[in-house]
Length: 248
Image 1 (cartoon, rainbow, N blue to C red):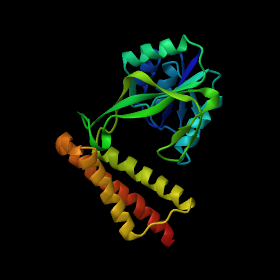
Image 2: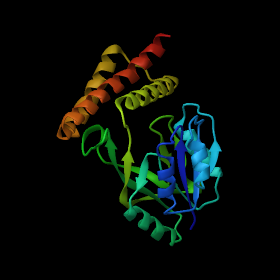
Image 3: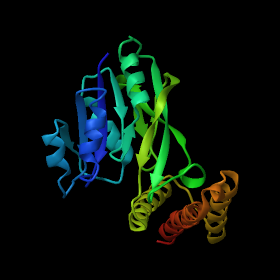
Image 4: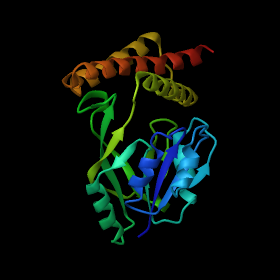
């Protein structure tokens, strides 16, 4: 079977060369879906042999992922973010899958996150599993933010894991949370969701409790506390922006 690896980008010159080289261990068909980079992302991607397609950013992550589906004829597609890397064990497992002939399976993979120079094992950035590899003709994505795939195939687990090198600074965290919270509020307002001031506080408090205590964020020390506290403010911001839209 054939495989295309899809990478969504905007101003990812810091990561783009490494992620393309990492992806090339599995396939020569690497598609970059760029949403308007103003740095050297596109130039570096093309220089390193990737195919680059442009789709204007409209606050819809699912639409970006769906846009790529008709840009390739590959049997399988694998989504990797620019700040993620496949481990060697994952690469070898993918090669074994490609040697088979089964288009009725989708695959999830464990993701381990490193942020601010720290590898997290609990709380907000705890290791999780994400669905990433699918038969191209059997998947569609939905959800503008925290998007999710819709695929009827049986789920299997890829060996190894994704190394996720996310936020390098707190300002980067803040800018992403501002974007995510705005998209979430606008999308949920259109869907008819409503909230009160008390409800916003309760949701944020419940989010902190879940991440810090239930998911044991406290075991990651001060960084665990910082990320859980930021999760409180992120959740609060989502609902306050929703409340603001209600008033308007």
